[in-house]
Length: 159
Length: 159
DNA sequence: CGAAAATAGATATGGAGCATAACGAATGAA
DNA sequence: TTCATTCGTTATGCTCCATATCTATTTTCG
Image (cartoon, rainbow over all chains, first blue to last red; front, side):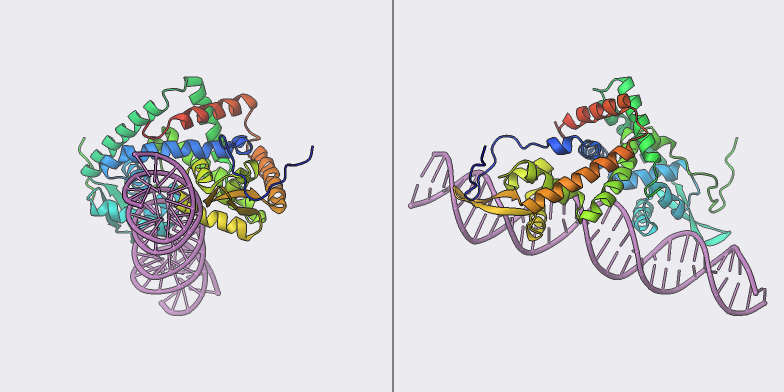
């Protein structure tokens, strides 16, 4: 069996094979996450929230008095990247940046009533959308998948 | 029960609660994917490949004659964003951009021997790293998780 | 105490990933 | 032939994330 001579450029026909990549867990997860992420973005758009601003709002609501450094650590992002987020939430009257009397460097973040309300509404919408997205998965599959992700997540990078 | 007066800013103590977010599949998946993504980036660094350049190299290797538009669609990115990727792979001598005689607008992408070799080496490294990363998951959990992600992935955004 | 180190938030800046608009060249359809 | 479409490309902008650096404040320690 000798190779057919490849004169110049023969174009590929038929569907594109991703057989090699399909075997990878990470490849599957990226494609899956893209779907979930897109759905989440659409869900949050009516509330004028992005994934990051929503996440920050939830964490501040659930943890009143949180400092920005704590919030950044919880969100796994660097402190500089949080500034614009808290600034936006504060500008929109969703959170307050109270000065801490005992440490005048820090802010104690706190959700306003409007912030708590928006957070609750957005959370309900996300819950509904996610339930619809996962409707095709039975309980066992959902539970095992969550458990699998928890275990992987537990592996700290470079740990 | 009247609220304690919140004079100014009381700071939050103890661990940060992410109870609300933890209930979301998407939240878990993002954190999980971050771990996998970071591991993949470390794995590919010795080969001077990023996730995108690696993915493109694999697809071109597995589908000789692929056009850029087809590759972009397979990678779920827009055509303009692929230009820099193919340009880099071509500059490094890993792929060729052959002109198609029957359509002088298009390129037929093809991996060079060096590209095929690097692709195989990188793929083996990725496989080994991923196996190590997933060592804590039994077969059932791995299989069901893959199946769950396949099903979610099948849901086309806005479909 | 007072000097040095550490910390909180902010600023500036850059890179990577993604999207849209628009272009020239080439092709295909009316 | 004229018009619409397609291929690769350029220009541009947004979001997310990281590092280095700054000021103002603690905190540590000699």
